Length: 393
Image (cartoon, rainbow, N blue to C red):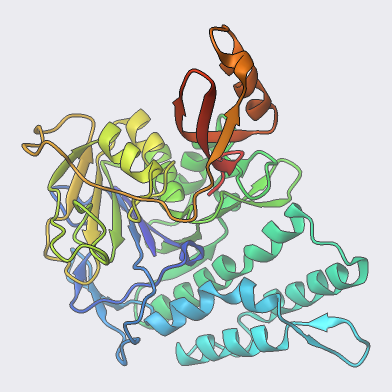
């Protein structure tokens, strides 16, 4: 869940499409840090830890307690679009996501939501999958459309739950608050000028109600649903923080901030209290599990510190990532790694002593929108590891 706090305003962004769910072992105080004006994203990697039987409380700075979504609910919401791709055939042979509906409705029922709260979205899913089944084609545009339903269902469940728990809330799709993107389905980015529209839209919302806003998704100028890419919830968090001129962006995960190594691999991994943006960006790009590679760019441009905190240990100070900060006394800040990498080797005797050979190699890669992670060269060969095509994740 992301929480955007500006003076007199709290926006909660349900960003479960990141492949995560919050499991809190103790109450978490929103607005952790020196200033309550912040944007907060909460997520924790789904692992072998069984879901908690109780829904933990979240303590607001004003002392009001509200309930966080149970981990099981987060997990079911996350997998909504994946389940929808394993539908059951109806009597006419057209795919209908019966199991997806049942799973999602079980989540809504466990939260006490009204029976018909999500029915309009269920009907929309059925219509969409019927069309996909009939044409037997799944385009990137259709994939983004169906991937959006987990977010949209999440915010409606959360807003309804908050309201019944005494915290007046409304669900909003982020495109209704000015988040307009380009048309690069699966890896969309907001168009220039969206920030002013977002500020105006947020300013027009009632101050006494909590807007619960979708993350991960958007719409292009034609009104077609887009997504910012897998694990893009962190990016949405910092984009909103920059647009709303927040004082801080918070990312709540399942580790004590950014670590010296992956704690699931290295048992002695330690917390890094302070990092510079360039260090954190390098770690994110080269495999750090804590941050999305593009997350830090909006915060860096807006000079907004990013604080990475642990949902399971909310009292831990975590890691503060800022433009300026104390120098790291260690010679090596952290070690990150990537799995399932491909190495491409280009060898040619024509490369020996010839200028422009590498330029021609990279021109071909650029034409196919291939991002290069690492490159090494010798006199007669060049080896490289390609990143995701078009900068996706």
